[in-house]
Amino acid sequence: MDTPYGSVPVWERPEPQPRAVPVQLSREKIAATAIRLADAHGLDGLSLRKIAKELGVGPMRLYDYVINKSELLDLMVDVVYARIAQVGQRPGWRDTVLAIAHATREAALDHEWFSDVLGGRPHLGPHALAVGEATAAALGAAPGVRDIDDLQRAVGALNAFIIGSIRREVTERRTARSTGTDEAAFQASLGPYLTRMLNTGRYPTVARLVIDGAHLNAEETFHHNLTIILDGITSRRPT
Image 1 (spheres, rainbow, N blue to C red):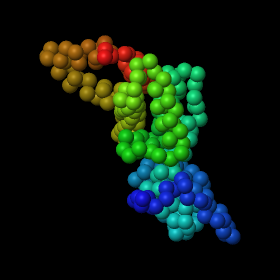
Image 2: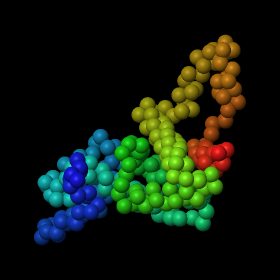
Image 3: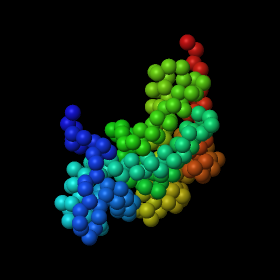
Image 4: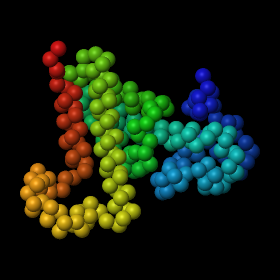
């Protein structure tokens, strides 16, 4: 069946035959260049023309390897999933899920554009499927997962947490760069206003969070909240 990406997915099409040209190309080389540009300028600054210029070839040569930008993005995403897949299967289901989740967060922080493509259409490249298989198989072995409905809900809850946490952390990093003000400086700038509002007594719980709450470490918070999610998955509900 034809798709917007062509009749055959990019992962299943053979590489074009090498040419007698000064610059040899491959999908791997094109994807690596695209990732380097996206890391520097984001997805909005990415185009086949810019990639071709970086590689020192004419833009039309790239169309032998990818039909459009959507296929290029598919290749880029699967390269990142290849890194995540390296964590492999761990002895226990929980250790496997924790390793995959932390590897996903680390990959997204190194390639911030990756967070922009999470949560949309499923990623179906070979390495993305490998990560999905390892995650689903691990959750399927959790004590509280008894049937396919439980597994679907467990996968959905885990993905929702991972995607939300990653996007929030990446957004804060981007905001700090674009404004030149980190979260602590932003809070300090609004300190007098916030103090006046909290002194009214109308927001007692918010006041506790602001005054008594510590500035939590992002990685530790991610791990802590992730374990809470996994604890919830393993809890057996009454039938």
